[in-house]
Image (cartoon, rainbow over the protein chains, first blue to last red):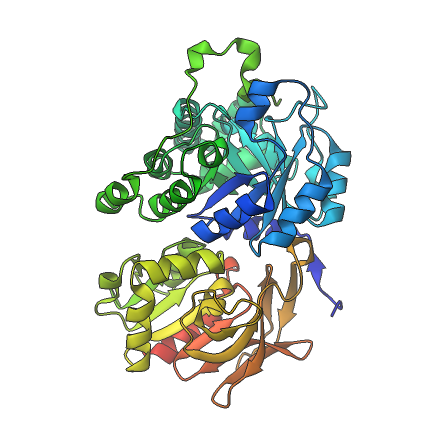
Length: 297
Length: 192
């Protein structure tokens, strides 16, 4: 069944990301955790060796996970499996594509491999998601071929403040682009370091050309619903689930909170009796060099 | 045409379906709870993750309410990809996965493989004079069809668009294209 089939087109990649909307993507480190995530109603899992909170605690160079672990997780669930590569490390991406992961996250949570260039994502059939703090960064990643964007937030902190900042900044800048005259778009494109054609697209459509998820610090159902209210298409939950007291219950609650983000009764019901959340970190306790969101160019 | 067509909005690309309907002059209602089905003549079940949609639909009582309305003949249904999986009588390899079971087919999830095998391909749909651009994303296939199920389009000999009475199901995503013909066909089928 080959024939005229076109695979790996930008429409196939962005269309796949559309299917995640209104859903929760969960970090998992074992097949057992992946099954818990699937049972809870996750739309996909992110397979990794250590969740961001542990990467933060243990330090050292954080790299792509062992393909063996990723393959075990792929075998354990029927939902899509994502995995992370270091910024700019296109060989890690080639390896993940070869083992058949469904989506690659070129992630600031891992130690960057290139301090100047991101991966040329057009070269791959597998779609990529990238982090962004503002419109310029998002459009640069899309110009490199990213099929999905997420806020960077501040991963592994359990503190939603940075994800909120990035979501609000993104929308503020989108609204600003809409308000500009057409002959002002070039100067703004230059100012934010984004390709003119994409700035023009945002000016005309009033949104990013790809799906935009929240990530980095989401720990409770209320956090997840807050990000949906701020106009995000869905959420990633990293350390927030499996670093909490009752992962099964919390995972289930966050999924319900994203679907029913506008229904306070459902939110109240699912927020009840969830056990201990992950221990959070206040951002002013982080040294500048410990801030992961600063990675990416 | 206000308030008679709904889109199941638990998870997935329900906004693209709403947009397609809007372009056909229909203001669709988002359905997240059983009471939102009140007064509907037609419901679209979007693409998304079929396990997620199935679980949420079962928990909040939507599954039973939709089944009742389809069985008494008052609700027409159109499922795309994950939505089509949810409609099926049988999901091959996943007997426990929550589903509606009103469409007499056995469906195979991810029948073409993982995401890197997803593709686009033009299709011939019965009754359409021009080809339709099919977007297949981790797409399912309809494997065993009951007697009342009519095949409206095939890809390499496998059914990818099927109809049984007022229930329509596609393995591809018409909502991701600008082509409104399949949505228009469904509205005619539903009498909406």
